[in-house]
Length: 136
Image (cartoon, rainbow, N blue to C red; front, side, top):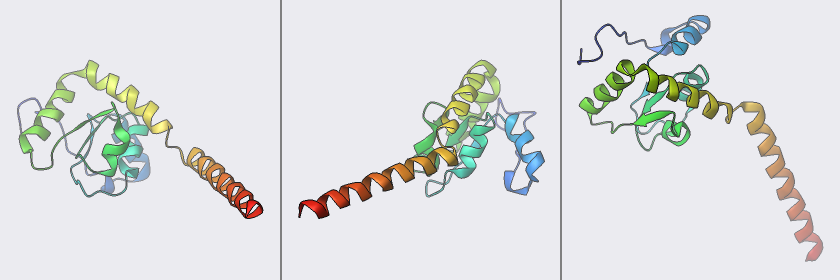
């Protein structure tokens, strides 16, 4: 175990039942996604919605949503991953600040809000199409 991470456990979130998952994420040092090809940020957002900061690979979907609620680490930088996790585990104040930012950031991605924004965009596109058809 890298220095600064002794006493910490690694939990594979996919293996937990829903009720246990939220509790685990709420108390997690961080949510981790090292796959730079990860095309879906839903797992990272779910963790952030539970108050977990994120440590993710640049270029991943998670990197697009974390903002200041996490840390970016190259997928090839094993010592960087250990350092990021040790930093969060050993610096509760900063971890808690990132957790608060994670909650705020995740709230921006609620499904109902996304659906509303999509409907507004589609409605505006339809109006623009009707205007263009009438002008032609």
